[in-house]
Amino acid sequence: MSATIRIADLANPVLSDTQRMALDYGDSLQLEFTESAVLGQAIATAGVDDFGDDGFRERLGLLLNEWDSDAQLTGIGRLTLHNKLVQHATSRLLIQDMLHKHPEIHEVEIREPVIVAGLPRSGTTHLLNLMAADTRFRSLPLWESYEPVPRPGEAGHPRGPADPRWQRCEEAWQGMQMSTPYLAAMHPMEPDHIHEELELMGPDFASYNYEWLAPSPRWRDHYLSHDQTPHYEYMKTVLKLLQWQCGPNRWVLKCPQHMEQLPVLQKVFPDATIAITHRDPVAVIQSAITMLGYGQRLNRKNVDLPALLEYWSDRIETLLRACVRDRDSLDSARTVDVPFDKFMADDIGMVGNIYACAGIPFTAQARAELEAFMAAHPRGKEGRIVYDLEGDFGVKPEQLRERFDFYFERFPAARPR
Image (cartoon, rainbow, N blue to C red; front, side, top):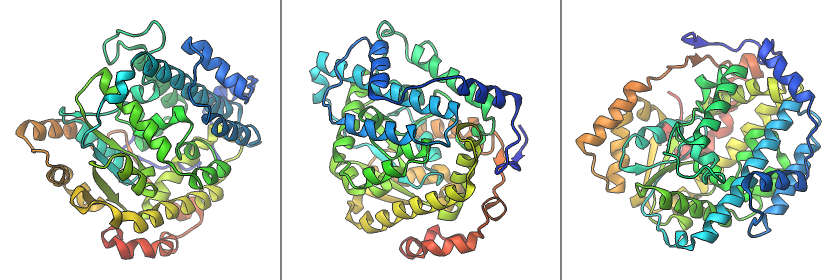
C-alpha cells in the first residue's frame, strides 16, 4: 500500500469487482428485521434460550424498526446490521448462561482500572493499544469483545489463533480488507487489536456504537435521553466474567462515549484513573466522516457526505459540551488530560504521566514492552490518509472550527497551532 492515500472518489465511488460482487450478493438476500428472527437465530447458535431481563427488547425493537425503514441501506448494509444484532443477542444468551452456572462471577472485583476517554480519532486507540502492551494489564482484544463467551462445544481452546472466536474475527477482517482495503490505514480491526469495552454493552443493546454502524437519529435520541448507568453496570459485569476466565486483574480500557458519560463512568468505576485525550475537533470530524463516507460505498445506495458532516459535527459538539460540563466533577487526583500533540511527540512519556497518576511503577520491563510495541507498529504502517475537508465536504476547516470555541476556551491545548 502506498505511503499516502487520497480517496478521490469519496462522493462518487468507482467500485472494484469485489465491491460489485458484495453488493450483488447483498441484493440477493431477504432478511427479516424482526425480534423473532434475530432472537431465534441467536437461540439456534447459542443452544440456550434465557435472555435474562426483558428490558433489552424495547431497545432491540427500536433498532430493528429504524434500520428496517431505512430505504438507503443496501442489501450488504442490511446484512451487516442484522448480523451485528444476532451477534449481540447470541452473546447475551451465552453471558446469561455463564452467570447462571457460575454466580461467583458477580463477586469478582474490578479494581483501579485505567480508562481512556476522548473523542474518536483523537489518539485513544493508539494510547489504549500502547498501554495494553504492558503485560501487567488485562485488556480486551477485538475477537474477545465480539464473543466474550465461547459457543457450545468451543470451550477449552487456548486463547488466540486456535480459538474459533479468533478465527471468525480473522475471517471477517480478511473480508473487510478485500472489500474496503483502506480501512486498515484508518482503523485497524484485526483480531488481536485492543478494542473498546463499549462492545460489551452490545449484548444489552446499548451504547452510542450503533450510530457508527448506520445513520440512527432515533437511536441517538433514545440513548441521550436515558440514564446509561444500568448499561455501564452490565458492561462491568461482563468485564468480571472475562477477568474470572483469565487474568491479569487490572484493566486498561477506552471508549470515546465516556466523554459524555463521565459522571456515570466515575459512579460505576469509582477508583479508576481516567485519561482524557484532547484534539482539534475539526481534525477528528474530517477523519471520522472520511472513514464513514468510504464505508458508505458498500452499505448505502448513495454516499451522502453533507449528511455525514452535519450529523457528526453535531455529535462531536454534544460529546465535547458534556466533557466541558463534567470534567471538573472528576477526582482530580485520578484524572489526566492528554493533549494530542504532546502525546504524538512523546508517546511513552505520556504513558509515564498516566502511570504516575495511577500509582503504577514504570518498570524497565514495562518500558521495554512499550518500546517493542512502537517498533512493531510504526505510524503510517498501512499508509496515511490525505484528508480534504473543503474539497470533499465543502466546508473550510477554520469555518467549522469556530463552532468549538467553547471547547478551546476550556482546553486551550486542543487548538491547533
